[in-house]
Length: 166
Image (cartoon, rainbow, N blue to C red):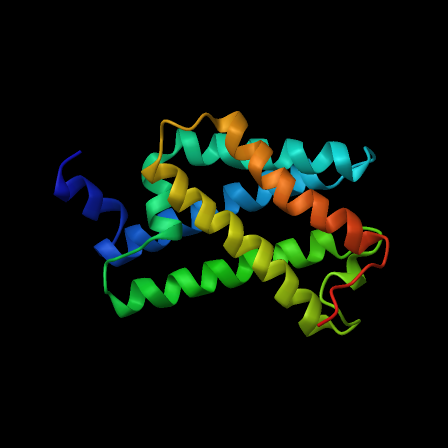
């Protein structure tokens, strides 16, 4: 595709970048909605969701870098990235808020504590995506199992009301 063709559809590189960020964020949010919500127990839904997420990261090698490791230095792109990450976080908050025991995740019942816990999950998976792209010899199944060991074991205990105490 030549530059003039691109500019027939987008006014600038920033507009193209923004559209790609929005598209990939939307696809990931849809993926989470598809796999996290449903009638199956969470111990079935969560590994399916993480596997679907890992498949997306694996099959979109350039999207992960745009979403998780943008180094453009462009202030407009950075603002767009913050905006789409905020939307993604809000969607995860909405999805996970319905899980039994979710109110225990943040250690307090207020919305900000829960959002903080969801951000920890989101940023942990983001970090895992970055790490995995740098260690692409690791099979997806191993990445999913590792994420489940960290997330599920902890989440399961929190769901029962157990909390870490200093």
